[in-house]
Amino acid sequence: MSARVRALLLKYFGQSLLLCPIYFASALLALQLTRFNGGVAIVWPAGAVLFSALAAMPHRRWSAALLLCFPAGALAIGLRGFGGVHTLPLTLAGLFEAWLAASLLRRIAPRFTRFESVRDVASFLLVAGFIAPAASAFIGAWAAHGATGIPFFNAWRDWFGAHALSLVTFAPPIFLVLRRRRLDTAKFNRERLPEALILLGAVCLATLATFGQSRVPLVVVPLVPMVAATFRLGRIGAVASLLVLICGGLIGTMTGHGPTMLLHLDMATKLLVLQIYFACVVLILLPVAAELESRRRLMQNLRDAEALHRLIVERTGDVIMRVNIDGTLRSVSDAGARLWGYQAEELVGRSAYDLIHPEDEQAVFDARFQALCEPQGTVAVECRVIGKDGGSTWVESHMCATLNRRGVPNGTVSIIRDNSARRRLIENLAHEANTDPLTGLANRRAFDRALARDVAEGRDSCLALFDLDHFKRINDVHGHATGDRMLTLFATLLCGTVRAGDVVARLGGEEFGVLLRDVSLEQAGVICERVRTRLAESEGRSVVGELVRATVSVGLTRLSVDLPVEEAFRQADAALYSAKRAGRNQMAITA
Image 1 (cartoon, one colour):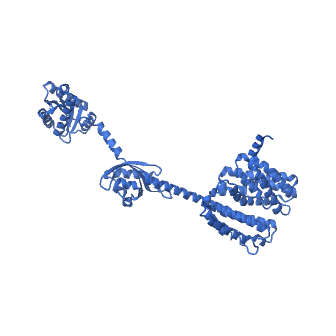
Image 2 (tube, helix red, strand yellow):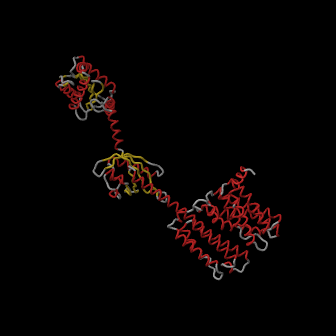
Image 3 (cartoon, helix red, strand yellow):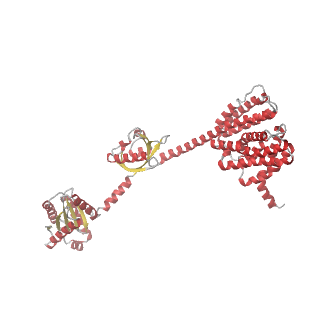
């Protein structure tokens, strides 16, 4: 045989080579020690061995395990079982049982060997304790009936009881042995090892007291240390306790000791009763261990989540705030204290609305009401928060509802971020979009909006257009820098002459516009004339210190609801150019 062939065979059958002799030995011992009156074996650990091995190995290795266990099982049955032609169906029945149980559990509960939840335990008990042995019992009962004439129902009942109890009893401890990863190793560290030894020692003593004598039935005594080991050590404590109990119980019973010896029944029935006892203990411990493991993992997840939450709360620059349904503050992260000047303890118990700027209270109330009405959503709102020093800070808050056990909202949690820089940026951009960069006055866009609004509202206003005379000559003679100085000088003079409620804008170049509000045409004319005369009397300086003078021409018109904005501009512009044609440095009013 070539080395390549040997390597392939070893790779394919390697994991099953050890399984074969173990399966043979467990089957042979069961047939030798627990088969009475020519019937089926009352205890069948071989099925649990094969089932556990299949559950622990990859599916692609199953065929090799079944092929190797077939001759082993047939040999054991041929030596100590029925023998003859019935060896084949009995062997196939045992293999089929293990294959069916492993296949079904792989589908409905892939992680059942860990017994991490009650669902895993329930699935294991349903399949291994009922479905698989019930199905294989039909084959086994037919073969036993054909071999010895045992009534079919009696043979089916004995097979089903023996195999179901054996799978439920022996499989969980074998899972622990076969699993190659550490299980609950934290329970058996150096610090917990003395406790584990004490608890398992107590299980050994209780088992010895129960199965080392046959005078007093102490079947409940082992449960006390076994339950204690399960609570303290988890799944491994439960499985280790079961191993001690099963080994001690079987040895004691087979040597004529234990509580079953008090029964006036044959040995087969006594072993059946013993397996029922073992199965009941398994049904008590495994669900408890699974539930404890589930809660342990839940608590660990909660601790991890709490640690992550604490890290986020302590390290993030955002404020995390929890508010009760009545609006009182339940908790505020330290970032809130740093941002608003408070200590976190100062805020707890206060109304959250005490921190909100009065102008923003309604917006915050509406957003919070929406969050409580739509628990699955998140609501964002911008508002101003009043700090301890009385100053206000713009913030952006994202809030969602918190729910109680019944799923009913009982408050909100908000993540709040300082929004001052963004608000300043928005305000600056809005200001720049509506402001002339040279003079600081409103630009044409802002002036048009104000003019249209006044016309639409029917306010008693007037429109005045100002244009500096011979401005091109100033630029040509003194330079553009001096021209900019004159524009700034006139803008300052204009703002200082008109009233606070009027709108002053640079419309472009050397042209300015003023929206004179709530005045008659005559009053507006007086204001415009004052502007013209003040500029004529003013003196400017060039960049080199030369004296520069300038004058301005003015066009004035009255606004009305019936007069479109474009027409108002056209009339004021016509009046302006009328003043220009008349010699400049004067005002013209639309007739």
